Image 1 (tube, rainbow, N blue to C red):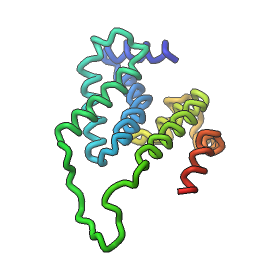
Image 2 (spheres, helix red, strand yellow):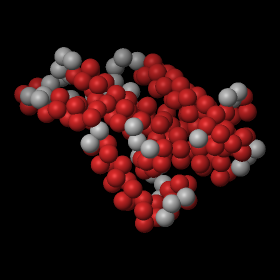
Image 3 (cartoon, rainbow, N blue to C red):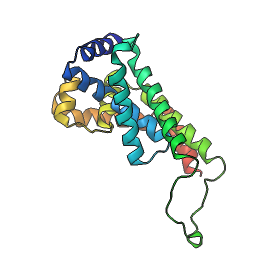
Length: 189
């Protein structure tokens, strides 16, 4: 896998469009997931994705360990999220909330911890999937959702097997002990 990624980086450095498209297909979902973990709005998530890819494009020639570009992209996306949040300041515009409707103005104590545990459980469950299932789920959950035809080309699999393979991956995620444990916690809330 690392050798494939390093090869893609080298091809992207040489200006090969297909290599760029493959890098985007592989890592776009990672960037979106990181941006969403910062609880950014849709427009901000799009900005983070776009700016992260711009940074990759600007820096591709200077990346010393091309096989680790995934980690480099993740770090760049996190930094971009933090930069965006710093720029926005502490206040974020929200709709007016009618207190009489019973909508809590703030998160319940410990809710952020539970959310972090849920994210960790899902990450652990996804890490337990096969490489092929991880790549498929990453492509299907990417910010720029590719067509099944493109997914089929990227993963070298028949279009007709994408749906069933996706369902098997989802079933494995649903039955993963990490996810089952966190579902029990969520049900008790």
